[in-house]
Amino acid sequence: MKCKKCGNEMPEYRENHSSGYTCPKCGLGWATSYFEPYETDQTEYTIIIFGNDATKRNIRVVAEYANINYLQAKKLIEMPEATLFSGKAPEIIEKKKALIENNISFKITPDFTY
Image (cartoon, one colour):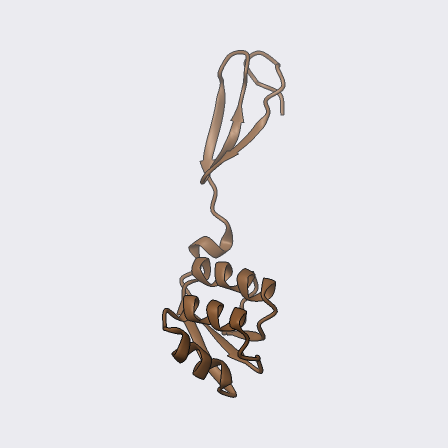
């Protein structure tokens, strides 16, 4: 994008929740707010775990995300299906990544598209 004032090239920038263009020569520019769609999603989602082995790693991860002790986590894992966590999209997306990294079987309801 070219600057309307001096014709210099204006590089795009994105920082936190701001994005825009600023001319490095004359300082002319504009900015706007930007949020990822999941950051403004107000839906309450639930993570349900199922069919997992009660390995030490799985017990540790489940205990951390359900905010329970190791014995409770082991019982939760051994259930056919169990609710691990309920929350908004920013919290769910973080936990989803960790569950995938640790090969823990889960589903999210309602459908989680992020």
